[in-house]
Image 1 (cartoon, rainbow, N blue to C red):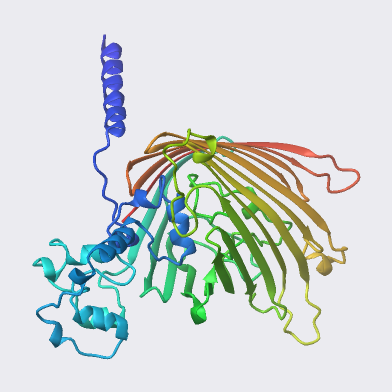
Image 2 (cartoon, rainbow, N blue to C red):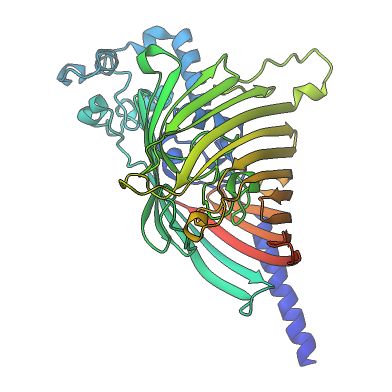
Length: 500
């Protein structure tokens, strides 16, 4: 009787928790960009941090918002220009040189509200909730003229994980993994910035023979810090400089549902070289949107203690859906519905050429270095609630064993082939499932991974992910007398990530 009672109570508790998770009220996410532009996280994300097409446009336009607010402003200006030019009571009190155009608008009373800048919807500037025109407190004239955000553009992201590793003695591990600080924004749409500061992370790295990757974790570290000069010299070209992930693949490393497994084509290493495509680098990059649907990027990487610079290039094109400026395609309602009305295809290609190893600045000492290249193609197919991602990369390293010269062993030349395919389906607006298959031949062996993922967003700034990785690895025989060995890893992960 007692066991039956305990079982009934357990079922009731579990059922109650499940129902509470399935019931979602109106979410109000508050990271930096949502605070700055007064929009929900779902404007740019499916389940964050995975971007939708509007989020991609926001990213490619250097954190300048091209949302419905600006469209409404343009329509309002076209309909009633005289209304915008209506003088404000305190216009004569404005002083300072600043930007002549912005200053004249301020004096005319069009930008006398808190939170309104050139990159935010001006329609909100005169609403009762936001500005002086509606009875609120006006934004500081000094901040407005100096293009300084009134709200600090800072967010925090934290993740807590529990993992079950079948291959380890202590199979279950529950711990806090990551705490990051993010900041980003733009100044009057002329310059932008972004930064990621890792305050704490439990993952460790013991590889120290190259100098451009992020330092070992368990310590504070700036992962990304760069500035962007938008539309330099009144051209479509943007210049990005600082520590960044060079633009190679279609997706940034954080742009995924998975919280524990990066896409293998972008994260694999060869030998003892720790170079990866998604690795933060010190670089100068030029990029541009051409014809609204073509995106090109190229850059130079400055690897510390290496005399030779590294270079890369990227090109991608989008067919269907909203373009890279967030313009929706025209829809003919009189025409019969077609599959192409819901189909969006993005294709991309990239190349990277570089050199890493020991420093080569010491006179009389021959450096131990590895010259390599990576070339890859990506494809993103979106149809209604289904999304398919395909990625593949070919790599070549002429000396994957950077310590070979120390032991009088010939350098090991390696060609690598890595591919991934992931299907994703949106069951509910806040419930998405995905399954990924990866094939990796990195010169050391073959690896096949099967990774199903289920992501749920009870709130727009909270994500719960249940993920499983089944990995089968076959190592190559290192000598003619040795034999190949098979390994199987099975890891289940439950992760809770939140941002504020």
